[in-house]
Image (cartoon, rainbow, N blue to C red; front, side, top):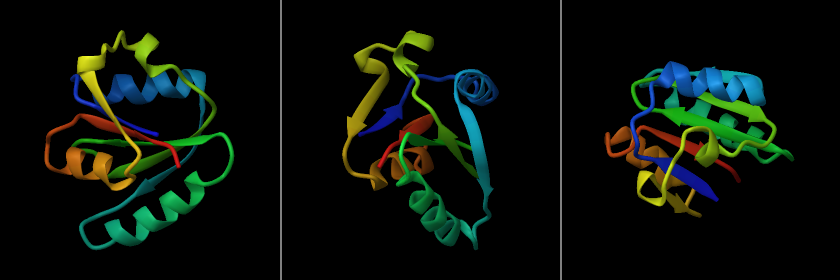
Length: 107
């Protein structure tokens, strides 16, 4: 299940809040040329147990976390603030098109 966050949350605040409750294992920095290869490695790392990823608008990084978090509770999200999808590509597409602020990815 992947969560597409539409509500604006300051990227730094989102990242630092997640880091308080979960372990940041790695950030994957990419550019226009390396994005697809880096994304493949990121998705591969997500398959391990108890992991989730974060992808934010205007930040050229994928973040890999270990742990569980209730993002709805922490940021007071309502059902109109996000969408849920099983399609792994949708969070990336929505963020890249500027239709979402961030995506929480779980494989």
